[in-house]
Image (cartoon, rainbow, N blue to C red; front, side, top):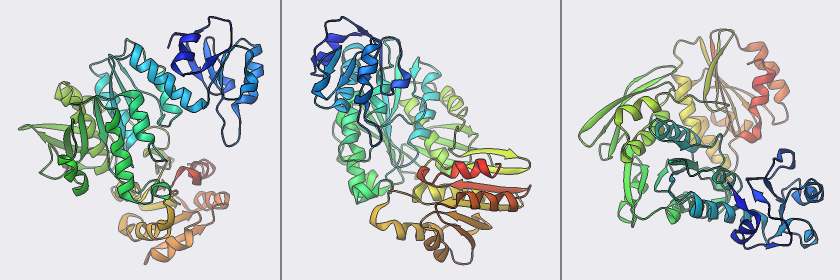
Length: 450
């Protein structure tokens, strides 16, 4: 991003009181990450108010975007809402300076980041493609990513997240996708949206900013989403799934402990794909990425090879070995749908002596949280020999997990849980870690030496 500060102020409908002619080379929201040419957005968070850093940054020569009129002096831009101004500037940059970059946008209840990274692999195989690291999918993270686009980028892949009504529509209006993917409609954020139908309406807000005539890739195994075909106007719905009615039909050929081989049938053609990630859910995410590539003119063989190079990172279903113990670290987030998918991966570890599920709470599910934890408990089945549960719902989970040994720990007993695992997990075991990020299972993994 390269803008004159006065142009930046105009883009945000802000009032610029400075006299300088600074050139803005990017944006930052953490005062510790200041860089030459950076424009600081003084966001007000739950714990820290960015306005407190404005005087110090002004003294160092940094212009700031603020909402508090007391900072009318200095090279600052006054706006009513700093977060909204951040989005306005990103939209301005996208529409005026990088409008030729084609955007692929992804949303959904689960699998967003995985699909985004797989799409990045596919499109980078043939185009200069921008793909943000991690899940920069919020009303702050996405605009910050858009600001990094340059006219040299032919494609960009963005993930759109939401925890409040209207956020997907708002973010779509910033990036203006030409192709969108909705991975699935699940139970994440039911605490805020109350019903799955409300979640579906929110996710379909991705079309509000999409270019008319663009593609929308949907879950073809969902009757509700399949029925949307006749309701989607000005866009081209394309369905991926295991059902024969889909435009891109998956068929699992071979599922192993650490890989999945499958074919995708489409347009009277068939393409084989080998993915070095286990589970049907991973194959489906890969199919979304493959379909998007084919629809945008990428050679099918190239797309298949590229998506097969995907490798999980961080705590997203990362499988590794520690002294003969197979660890499946999948504790970035959790919902009923992703819990069941994780159980399938654990079940595939057939060469392991024992399979252990270390589970924790699924957060933000609202008034049905108790029932959903009970439902998930009943679905553990023969995937695990026994369960270690950490969290507020430990007793509810254990009571519903009939016939299965469940060792329970409270949410503040992660130290004790780690000590138990360190003492009882032995070489030959496979151990799944799965919970919402707020539970902090990554600390248990580290303390247990796994």
